[in-house]
Image 1 (cartoon, rainbow, N blue to C red):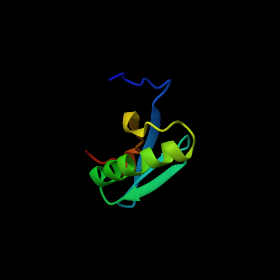
Image 2 (image 1 turned 135 degrees about the horizontal axis):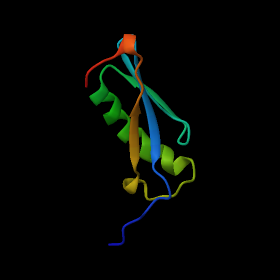
Image 3 (image 1 turned 90 degrees about the vertical axis):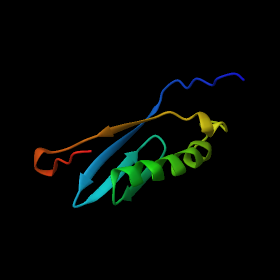
Length: 80
């Protein structure tokens, strides 16, 4: 089976505010939130393939690459 290589991976910016984890990816048009980091990443992995196809990136969404970039301010820092 041939492996599909994407020109770039999708970056999801993750923030934590007021006990809510928020994930945003402008390229995919993705914005979602969850009560934990694990729940957020799981939710993003469910949503991202559908948005990948809907936004015309292709139809092989099972090969999608996502990087999670966590941003924290010192007053809101949270250990993972």
